[in-house]
Length: 434
Image (cartoon, rainbow, N blue to C red; front, top):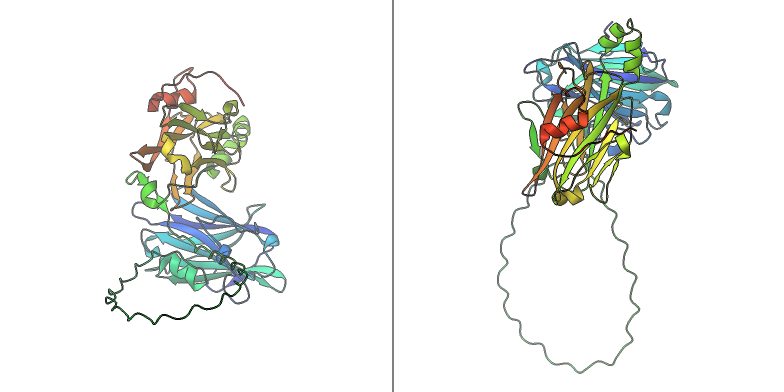
């Protein structure tokens, strides 16, 4: 049952999952969940107390942004709050939403659910029914009361977007800097009369050199709120124009089996076991500027290297799809001049015969510049390999292209060789295993 605005309920669970949900459809703006950890003053202690898509995990580990999933015509963006780990100085966890591409008046079915993270049982739900021009919303808050936690339905909107909401709680937001006006030219100096010649002074001992003052502490970097979402209509973005041409580029793949499939598959016995052990592998085909080609993948322990060719490193092999770990690959953009092109792809190693019934999201986070994200389309073919993104270096400009391209290997042809054929790599392949 949905709560009334301003009402509250006890939260008995030690950890909860907070789901921001809304209906999807043509012309519906995207939305993002966020959380702010407040002390007794009602403000954040520092910018680190803001958890959202660009800052996914709080330093304490108590709050984590898990990302979006689509199912049945709706979208959810989720946060996990481990109430037992929330620091004693934090009295309130504000649960907010921001819209991207329009106001919340155009977002149908906007709501927030709080469920027990362990059992999935619903603890609270608040449906927002009066949104209009707002582009950010505080939907609810978790707060301490006499040693226990409660949830309150808030429903307070902002027309100034995520930036207005964040600054209202004390967050420093990164804003474009305005160039200072040029100072008027100084008048030409007039020559001064020559001073009289003085008698030479007696020599004095030079003072001992003073210790140099310590360098000033580096100012805290403000929070960046920008992000780029790639779609079929707008599938590419220039990393160079975004400022992301140095440092580490982190690529994350997270996924989840659709809940309705889980329920249906539970009657099939063996199918459940297969999907419970689903193992997806994030991989990359690379071509360097000197013509060298290769693959980075868990198969054959070809995990790559970050500080030597191919300047690409696969972190590990994950079977859960959780955004906090997931499958992660890092590209060293400090050597981007040595990179010609890179195809990032995913294969099914075991546990399923195709990507059908999976929700998957790809996020590319450069050390400098806005993060880039996109969701995969629904798979309607018996595909076991999907090209996710193509990164190319064209005359020094790095471009990220959303591929989201499901491929169907021919009989006896491996997923890796199928990607090779599709993108013209021309490599020789031999069987391998983990």
